Length: 270
Image (cartoon, one colour):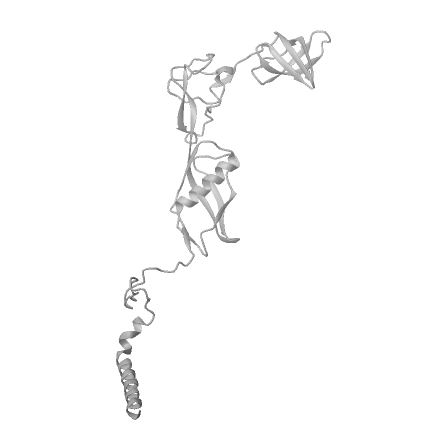
């Protein structure tokens, strides 16, 4: 019995001694997985950078993102259609958005007379309700839209149509001219001056084609609710589609204003 106790004490002392000697080797395996198929994680040496760096929640706003935001704001402000292209006249320095990527751009001032090729725009950028700064930038702007272009020479007084004109996409801000957009009804216009082949048409090149001429008898359509009356009248002016002209009642000899709605036809609404 005494020998057995001595043996147990010796074994315990031996185990403690071995554990003390191997402590530095077994420490990395202290939390090793019990599944032998799972590889043991080996910590990288202190001199090696970690493979994953914790994000600081910051993002840089570069020029393309600012220009895209400005484009959306200006398109909405001026009610523009087409493809608006913007660039900065000077280099844009990226700014940092702390605590995430949420930010918004607000245009405070833009040209009152409409967008031109070199607009000066004042704007600010905010993130989470805090201002990141205010800027006033001169931009270079191009607006590409389909417009009517003469496919041959068009003479004064000629009525343009799809056989003499075609649609072509051009930068409508380049020359600061009022080009005729694609939705213009050419059939109610006539050339007010001669235009060379391949030249885009402007509002100065066309005039409304007269559908009613002065001193001409016209059909007068009178509408009041569900009541419609037709009578004859004398045009006291010349007008094209949609224009208002003075007309005289042949019976009462009273004059009134009427809108030209067709050839030799005007309408009065009450």
